[in-house]
Length: 65
Image 1 (cartoon, rainbow, N blue to C red):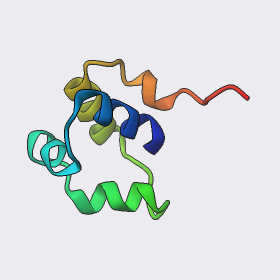
Image 2 (cartoon, rainbow, N blue to C red):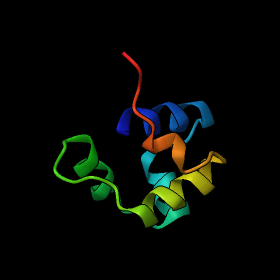
Image 3 (cartoon, rainbow, N blue to C red):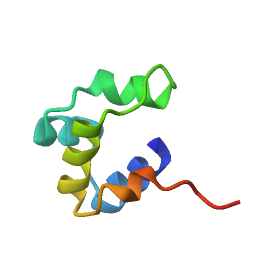
Image 4 (cartoon, rainbow, N blue to C red):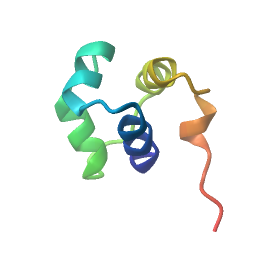
């Protein structure tokens, strides 16, 4: 999921800080996801999906192969 977030973030040209401010998700939460310390909860996924204009399922789909 984190890799998908990074791809969307980079495509939009924003920083973790900007996403954090705009969504209310703390930067430490992104760090926890990156390091595998936690997995995103549904409310956070919904906020990211809305922010990036993608369906929430985008983050839930497993990459094939």
